[in-house]
Image (cartoon, rainbow, N blue to C red; front, side, top):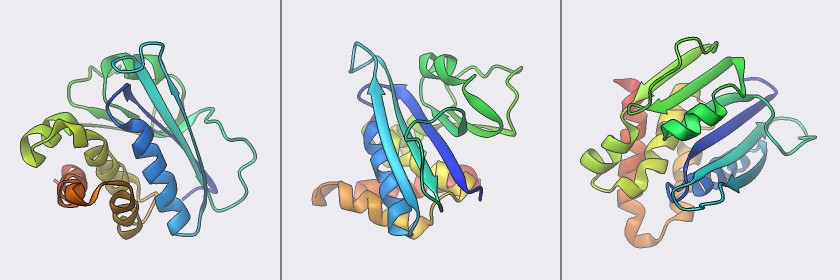
Length: 178
């Protein structure tokens, strides 16, 4: 792992990416790393482009905003198109299978997986797409420890949704393992 990892989670408002960023930052803190999280919404809020940024580092973090992402997650075409060029060449880009990938994009690895479909069909609720995505990010990058990620997820969801979110996380891990 690099000294500092910059992560940008993108999609539309209402997909839970702000919460996903908060959970990812919390998992990093639980494992003893430094982390900062910030977010922005498009003018439409729900349905508009939204992004959540997380910086995870073993060292002090000097600047709280992501410049060029090491990891980019996109759940919508609009978000992908908007943020695809703000990645490092060493980046890992993870997109929902509904997204048309720019073949000229210069990154280390592109992973196209059915995040939203998995949340809807395998977990049973599209609302947990963000948690499925976190599982996929963890399995693809090992940026945070699986146990700390699960703990952070369970810290942030209501008790009655713990099993649903645990299943969503597991399905996210499985998307990369398969």
